[in-house]
Image (cartoon, rainbow, N blue to C red; front, side):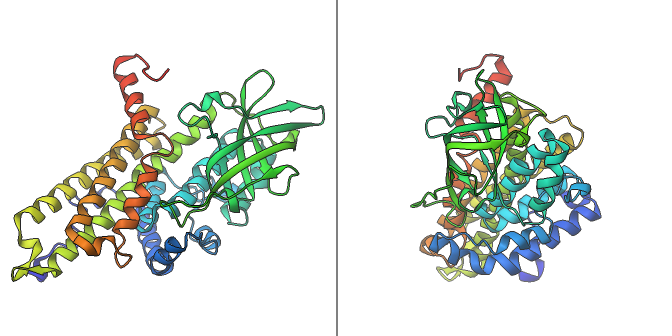
Length: 393
């Protein structure tokens, strides 16, 4: 039976035929790195609720940070499908590690590249790409999550500089970040992006403890107490809520791919276990109900892969809409979470132990289904697209 087993079952529709040799080479190099450097330690760091900060430079060295940013600024200069495949392989190992990577690439490097001045691009992007700087993105506030436009953080023009006050909450990378892209309102109530650096007086990044999800990712607050921000740190390329939402579109796109990676890892773990675990004198994989679970998992993974690939094509062509990205993020994360739960059942009691990755994936995905647009908010975004009537305002 083992000789006939399809070892590449998760590419059920032969998507590899559509990827370029470069796509596949980069995917395999990231997968190899994650298996060698991260998989052996991720359970330990997750149990300790500790961020493996030594990986930041290694992530940079293999091109995880800013893969779509032009090479002149230290990025990889690759297309959107390459970015998606990188996120897939990182999250195949751990969602928290993908959070670190996608925040750096989509929420810090992307806005500086898209909205920053040439001086800002040259100053920050190479150091973010090389891992010398770790970045974070400050949009969500204690009282404003799904309604970011209600933010209270504000800055005032003091002639030679700005004074920033306010706070942000649930910020990935914050406790370790050297640079923060922060969104706040000016005196007229218009949202702008500002670049803050660690060490600015009045700028603090306290860590949030007690998480049962994304435990290997560092999460914190951003606190601004009369922070003096140089005027050259204002991003001038775009203002208004549309600017941070464009960043979130980029990150959500990466999440859609990443969730597929987590689902594949859960599926492959459950499949392998079902062929080894014996009950009633035969492998549990021979029973109809186990085969039903595995068949449904593979079906959902395949559908999500096709969504990602087509969305990647649209992104490459500059045609992907926010609502199309919402559909992919919502569907794929929900799919991955359901697969994690089904896989856990196949493993029985072993599924809750750190010997297998499933429970860690499941806990992580409970955050992924909420952050960067909750499952229900993305549903309402699609509802608005369908009917033309916004239901969340």
